[in-house]
Structures are given as structure tokens and as C-alpha cells.
Image (tube, rainbow, N blue to C red):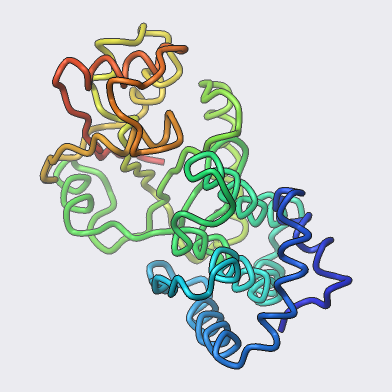
Length: 300
């Protein structure tokens, strides 16, 4: 199920796991293999991950692990995804997905370990269920953006249908995600990603007709336009989307704090002001304002 101790470092490096974590993961492998309860949990987690491979929305919700697992618990879901590698690679091959796209998509695992280290000061995964999307064939890195194979739900499907779009509830859509540590969100980079996505999904998933791109993100909050110039990358990204009505709006202040500063628990009064986006997020909160996750779409 798992690569040998000698093989594991190369596998981890291919997944962009940070170098400083390689030795610990190799050393803990012996403890995982020798612990019947941990092996049972690994088997169950792997089965849930690869069940209904490729089916949108069918992935697992992983349980929180007992603190008694210690360091093994810190890395446990990394081992789950390493064990899932042969399954997702076989799925990719069955759809003719090029090796370079497969590699860059799955390497997002290492990026998320880096995100955890920035937020918590050590290794781990903040949201392992999110990483399961990559290892189930649901999500792909295509240039600057990630594209998740999804289905229009009740609210988004109703919004696009009400706007006269050809798609509606239950139809396939591509959910766009913006990753950190990938350089500027420039219009040119986004255009290239969209062009790659149109070709990629038409070629490798020809039975699924994607007519709609959607995004659910604080980056779509129109309040950002109060603080950023009209030619800012975020503002130009917002302008790609049509707002979707029908969603309840609740403040989600911790979301931009987590994405911009790395740690959602940072005191608002101490948020840095080094960049335009940092100043926008922090100054707005310090003035008593709130940020919201907004919902948008555009036709493909």
C-alpha cells in the first residue's frame, strides 16, 4: 500500500512535500506500518478516498485524529494521499491526462503543507478533505488557476438559469480556485488558465459538457473596489463574474485574514500593512467593517 522507506523520499518530493519534512515522514512510516489500529484507519481512509473515483461531490469527510497519535497524527493524511497515488494516477491515465498536469495537480499536497506551516508554525494539513479533491480526480491545476469538476447546486443553478443561461441546476460546472504561492493573479495568467481549461475538459472529459464557470470566494467581495485601483489584478478578476443572487450573507472575516496573512487567529489590530491587499483587509476590519464570501459565475 505504501512505498518502501527507500522509495518514499522520491514519492514525497514528486508531491512537493517540503524537504524538512521528508526524514520525519520516512521515520514515522515504520510506526504506521507496525501499528494495527493506525493501519486499520489508513485502510479505511484510503477506501473512502478512492471510492467512486472521479465522481464530483462523493469524497470523504476525514475525522479529526486523536491527540495521542502525536507526530503520526500530524502526518497521517499525507500517508493516505501517498497510498492513493496509484489509484488517481490510473484514473488520470484512463482519461489521457498528461503526466505534467497530473504531477502539478498532485504537487498541491506539498503546497498545503507549506500553507499549514505558515499558519501553525509546523507541518500538517489544515483541511485534508480539501486535498482529497486532487487525489480523486475532481480537481486539476491548469496554469494559475485550479478547476474543480462540480455540479450546479440549487442556488447557483437557479441564478444562472434565471439569467437566461443555457445551464441550470444539476448541470456540470467548473469551480474556480485561486491558490497561494503561485505568483500574481494577472489577467494574462487567468486568460491562459481559462484557455487551458476549455481545451483540457473538452479533450479529457468529452462526455461532460461544461458551460459554466463558478467561484465562491472573498476575492469577489465588491468592497475590495473601495481600496484597490481599477487595474488591480483582484478587481479585474472580479469583473469576469456575474453575481449570483440567493445566497445568505454572513460575515466571514477570518477567511481573508487566513488567506492574506496565513493565520486566521491573528489579532486584527496587529495585521501588517505591507501591501495594498493587506492594507485593504486589515484597515476595513479595523474600521469595523466585515468581509463576505461572494458567489459569481460566467458562461464558458
